[in-house]
Image (tube, rainbow, N blue to C red; front, side, top):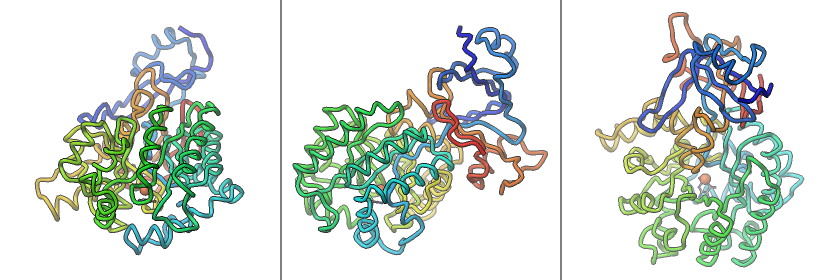
Length: 444
Ligand code: GUN
Ligand code: FE
């Protein structure tokens, strides 16, 4: 094997998900080796001597993960609106459609000015990385140039990212709309080719129709064709609020259902991720399943915009891939840790108020959704999501022993307690190091 001195080895505890049905595996005395950003071995510390020989590394390559600490895969935010960070924590007193026109469109319109967008997007990427988001699927605004700046900033900081220039050509305010379907398609294509031409190793463009309510049939069909032409992802919103669904069917009755509209226009598929999916009928669930379309579960936003409670266990039971999304700023928090807690509360609420036999979500399943589930939803599970040889080392070094921690661990507590306390009470202070593709992107 290589005698490359860039081998880096982590000795100590790690946790990760193997699958939806094995959402939490804890290894107390692990040994994970990383070279050129990729995981080259996942083993145990007792084999250290033979690993040293096989992979040619010495003690100076080793980082010890001590007591009260562990490694876990990086968090994946499958749905976040970067410009809306401007409003994070604000304007949560309205339902979806009024919230969009009152607070959100005016905020996004400001991003026409690249000089405004640049320092702001810088803060968004720094903030999400600090919170442990190693992969983010971003919506920018309708403005191509500032969306390209967001892609560049994610690249510069070393975050794995999907970045979408939002497309919308109808039923939107005069100050925040594209001139025509043709113009919107031209701009979307230019965005995709410009980002692809940069050959960023970790950043991909994503086709982003805002939702059926602000897109003409010509635009939706054209965007689907562009995604196929360049083999890139599509992201949009689906079945979020009842008023939104009624409006979608008023505009496009031929779809038969909201999901049916997207299906008819070619939007569904293995590289498509649908945010929210709060109110779907079983035929719509089947359409998602048949087409391999996945779901971004955004419980914080669904509660704060009074949208409802998304029954994601039903989707998981049907083998539809589900990840978590902060949905800033429908969701107030850019931290996926908060989203995990709200996903648990979402499931408990369904169980208490709608269906006693609805299975509530465990902290282990929340961890799966935030890591491997997100990777599956974005169809990048071969690249990231857990610790497997050949995958990228996208990881968090969690430290609950630090003096500034708001989480207190007592001497009789082991990893099972430590992990739960981190998931329920931890914050940025406990995320000591963040790695994306082996590179340190945050170091406390
Ligand atoms: N539906 C269409 N646009 C948006 C948005 O920006 N946020 C949310 N939560 N839903 C949407
Ligand atoms: Fe959203």
